[in-house]
View: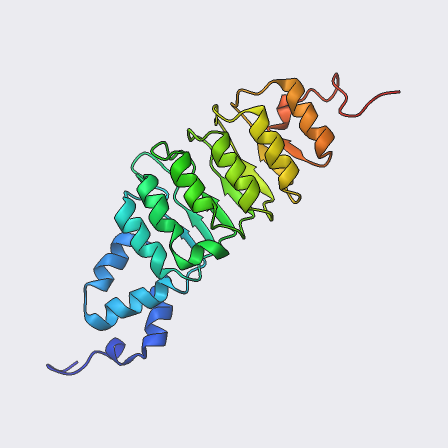
Length: 228
């Protein structure tokens, strides 16, 4: 390329440039790409709008940076902001900001796994707008029945929910969840403070419900259906 001559990639139409940037999965690389020039910044912004899946698991993100990217991803279907060793540090304020994003009403899957910095206040705000949700992982958090009631009221299409280690959720919350979510097929209750007999009660409400882990049940000694 001669001095002063435009690079070949600069001649690409914005639509094609955005399509190329969709394949960049590293947020650090996206940030660097966005800083190249005004055209590339717009290309990165448009590429976010084409993404159906977005995972921040393992990335060191905060409320502001996470919400900024999610707002651009208006076509998003699956959002994973699970916490790992160096991962997301989302607070209730972050969940509140996320709840205002256009994509939230169309999300089919959300993972808030291990987000110990969130409470019922933030979860209720987010879930109340996630009316298309089918899969929810909220295990490892300190939510209570208040969040579970919101899930039951706002997510009629829910098929699976992970409540792993949610020790502040009671039997009352689980009953409401199973009764109000007619499509619920799987529920993970590992590490919760609910008695074994109560899990059998859930099966009387929804016989086809899969309670995970299945090792909770000793299928050889405890019948799930009455024996006559």
